[in-house]
Length: 384
View (cartoon, rainbow, N blue to C red):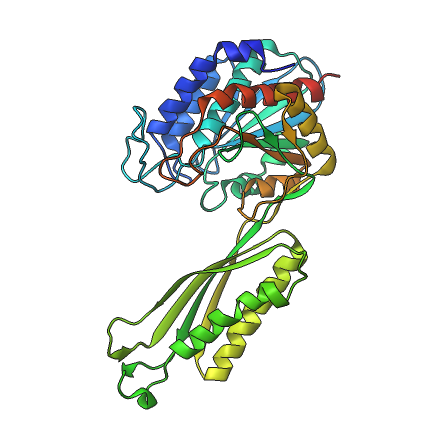
């Protein structure tokens, strides 16, 4: 097998959908026009069961097969990023300061392509539940959809998702058994002392030595507090304090992120951050405030479903990398995989600008491959 002929036949139409979405990127939960576009296409395909307003602008659609059978969820994210596009393309973003720089326009087009084919053919039993999700890049629209009960409401038994990959050749699928993306936790630390004239430090309580000691201690969480084979990232991303050459500030702020692949390492890293911050604060006699925000959990593929999905991908392009190394980025599809068995895969779109880069653009040649993957997955899993 390869790309499904019928899907290849409307590849230009899929490219048109994608390029339209690319011109009108929307952020976070506010994907109103994107959702309207998705709903309009679904109605054109003859999909009658369409549910709007889930996670504010999320869309869930159900395609009925022929008779009783499994219920499988297929997810695509819809939101963009607050970036200025630098591609110079004729269909570049028309909205200043917003850009589809992570391929979510392509993900949406791929799932729409699969929906068009599956609604036409109905060559499967059971039901397909299409999950068009907002806010993957921000507050976790996937989490909100789960909290609003989509798994139970629509009887989803397994769930799958694809993400484009501009660091691999066109048509190469990648996945793994177990963790594929990291948990993400963010922290903000405020070290408060007493400011004053820089020429008279003895009259101040300088927050800088304490803040620097915290910053110097954090790398030891990775190098000395976890096993060398455990994956952990602790990165400081901001260090702010002061406003003049001759003034000791009253406060210094540090921000950063922690990435991990297991619950045990995640909990230990948080514990060590808290201990270091409290300990250094006490050592220097500073008031220290820590805001530690636990965000997306690790994205963990289920073994049987990852193996099944890899087999489907092999049928589409014959190019599958199994058990690829996990990545330390994060993905809110993790919440759906916590609720139901399933798998997350990457699809190579050809080597080019990385995601979240101002010159990134989804490769429309990948869309028929992704749509065919979704369609074949349903036809195979629902063949009984």
